[in-house]
Length: 109
Image (cartoon, rainbow, N blue to C red; front, side, top):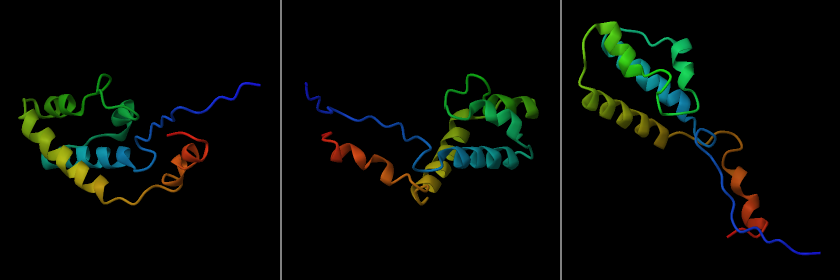
């Protein structure tokens, strides 16, 4: 019997250790509120699990609601900073910290 040693373990933790989805939605809602607009959850859910905004782009929708273009670079930069600041102080989600423990025990580097 040939022994196979684990060479690596790859985890996709985006949103599993820290709740990045809720924080992202909240900061977009705040951006909309600053302009007196609402970001409906049913539109936002098209983006859950990804960051490409190919299906629904919140900034496109905000501009459509306002009927004018916005300074995207400024608005997006401010929103991203708020989101990062909040994620940095979040406690880990239940089970998130211990999820990666088994790899080292199985011989992964």
